[in-house]
Amino acid sequence: MGAQLGFDFAAPRLVRVTPSRLATWRDCPRRYRLGYVERASRGGAWAHNTLGAVVHLALRAFYDLPAARRSPDAAAALVDRNWTGEGFRDAAQEREYRERARRWVADYAGEHGAVEPLAVEQWVTAPVGGIVAEGRADRIDGRDGAAVVVDYKTGRHRPTGADAGASEALALYAVATARTLRRPCTRVELHHLPSGEVAVHEHDAASLDAHVRRAEATAAELAAATDALAEGGDAEALFPPVTSPGCGTCEVRRHCPEGRAAEPEPAPWALLAP
Image 1 (cartoon, rainbow, N blue to C red):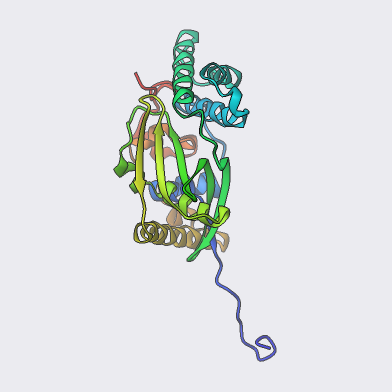
Image 2: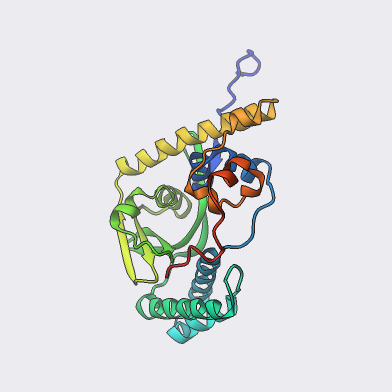
């Protein structure tokens, strides 16, 4: 009826965003354009990223095992199965960090191996406000009828409850998990494998809404710039570079003279915890 009367009832476009996209735009619009719009070629592997990826793969495989087989030894063996030496300085350094990863995962299995997750490496998504928030949660546990978002950390920084509460990624995963699994989800956790510590935050409606509103504002900015570029806009004006210490490890720095001038590129193993 509306169309026959000449009215346009087209719904406003929802912008699909992941926490990674949002963070990249805020860090550096040029990096966003190169990484997500132009899909530019990326640099080589970093050892700390390799280490984190192996641990995540091992834990994913660990929780796929039947409960009776989830032993610390089985967890350590899954590190070996998924290991890659990309980015490490030499064979000796690779062995050292492989052994660290084995120990982290084995200790974690001894502490958390009995958990029966609702989901592992689950893609969650939810239209909320002007965005579709989505992403892949490391693990989602079920406790007292609610869902809990669990994120693994392997870096040198020991996260706190404040870190968990400030994490936009965890907040958006909580919102999307509640929609995807149809369970309340307000608790988020950062599990730091090197220390064995668990940082916890319990969101409420207001804190989740604050994260969503911030994500909406950022999504509107990046969508407007992307649309303007598609209409022939100036890429340099729409997606300016923002230099920072992060330029040294930017995966698209080869395409960015300003970034290369701002920061030298460290060795691929420089960000490993000592």
